[in-house]
Amino acid sequence: MVDNWRSWCCWTTSYWMIYICILLVCRIKESTQQIVIEELKVPKVVKAGDNTSVILDCVYDLHNSSTRGLVVKWYVNDTILLYQWIYGLPPITDPTDEHIQCGYKATDDPTTMYRAMKINNLNIKHTGDYKCNVFSVADDVSRETSMIVYSPEETFDLKYEKNDDESGEVVEVTCIAGGLYPEPTLEISVNDIVFNRTEDFDAVRQDDGKYNITAVLIAENAHLQGETVIKCTLRIPNANYTNWRFLTYSSGTATSTPSVTTNLLRKMDIQVINNTEPNTDNGGGWIIDNTSLVSTIY
Image 1 (cartoon, rainbow, N blue to C red):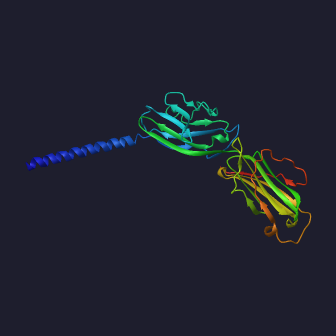
Image 2: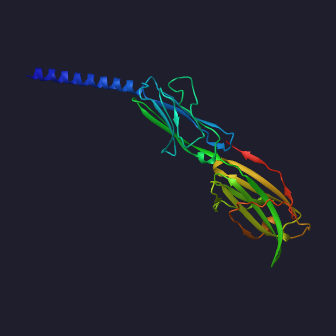
Image 3: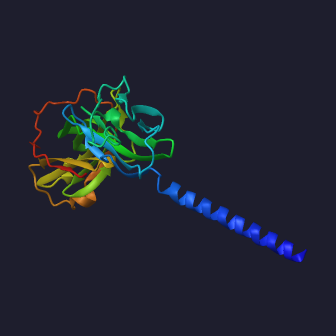
């Protein structure tokens, strides 16, 4: 009786060991057949323009898994389907977005030929989170990344004018920029000393989605000695974009008053206004250096 029990236990143990081995082999085989998205080639930052095109490429490897039911999809902001390719059929695109080029071939391999999505004539509305989804009967994988399509300034002016108030003659420096995306900031400095920023203020967004922004600095004329270099720095932080305007102010009178850095400001006013029609008048005693330095980092 004991021998029979031992034989049964040995047989049962062997059976389960064989069963576990079979499961492990199947699992290993299954894992080698998983789809892997090796790289999602999407530019982080790109400038908007009628002649600008980008290719969003979903580089995947089937790892010998079946192509049965193979489908590649591109989404923006998680829910909006822009592009779909079913293996063996022509790709289709969102009919409401005429910028997406249908039929762009990424490779000559029939299993990856239409994996990429090409967008022509980019505009700021193409900013978003892009997701590539690849699935078949064997697997279902996704990968996501963001793309910012920025718009540099359409207008950018730095100017000043003299006015009189109860305390005497004052100089009002105005920096205006318009037609930007995403949200910009402005910074005014005098002789390399920064006096105001607009980071704490909201730029005004227009109907077309772009922003206008204005910074104003008011100082007493008596505190501006000799030639004073005024600089306005425009930034689009999320796009790593920076531009500058310089202006040279001459008071015409040298004084012995304390330094500009300690006595420039009588009052400082930072405003953000809806400037849909920027002032382009370049007359009236304004000395404007049109030097424009642009730095764009990708």
